[in-house]
Amino acid sequence: MTESGMQPAVFRRRILRWFDANRRHFLWRRKRVTAWQVLVSEFFLRKTGAPQADPVIRSLLRVAPNARALAALRRTQITRIIAPLGLQNVRAKAIHQIARTLVREHGGRVPRDPDALLALPHVGRYMVNSIRTVAFRDPQPIVDANVARILNRLWGHEIPIEIHKADSLWDLMRALMPARNAERAREFNWALVDFGALICTARTPKCGICPMRSDCPSHRLGSIPSNPR
Image (cartoon, rainbow, N blue to C red; front, side, top):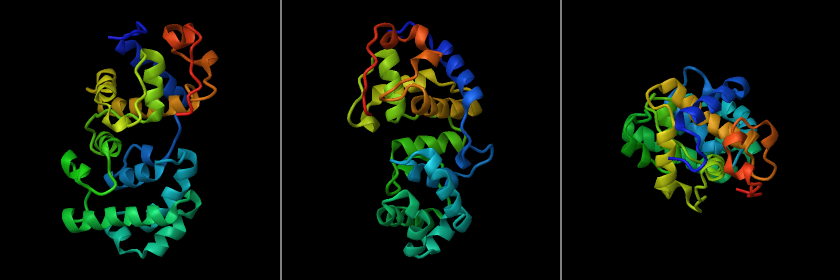
């Protein structure tokens, strides 16, 4: 299955062991989290680091703990809360639209059905799978630039321009993840995101402390690319 020779079970074991020792703690990673909390969190994590987004997401959710509450807010109220993240006017308009759509079409609830989720405005493949995995305990792969970079370095998988359309990447992640254990599946997804953010970084990867280095062809061949993605 892999050019690196690393079997899926070995990769899962190593990445989850690393995550258990190095996990980051955010609101959306609580044991009990609602689909609305996951949706709002993933929306604001786009183009924003988790440590910076977390306090702002907490502030917004205190005022708008559900879609109905956010839909009832004036857009200027949302803009003021999320201003520290930047792009506040665009983001406020978009999250307001999502909330109003949920109220109008789903009674204020985040739907479980993946097609219904994908039909929501400003919601894409990554967000849908994150909501399904984290909130509904339906294990699904997630692939962002961090994850794609890890798959590129370990298995030589090309990093596409449009990651959400690269079915082969998503299929590989599905084959790697512990799909029979919902709790470990969501931790596996978080582990890959954190590992890409903290260890297998774009410009200065920390290969010296990487638990994958013995089976990483990029490290072995000295070909770790300084890819800004």
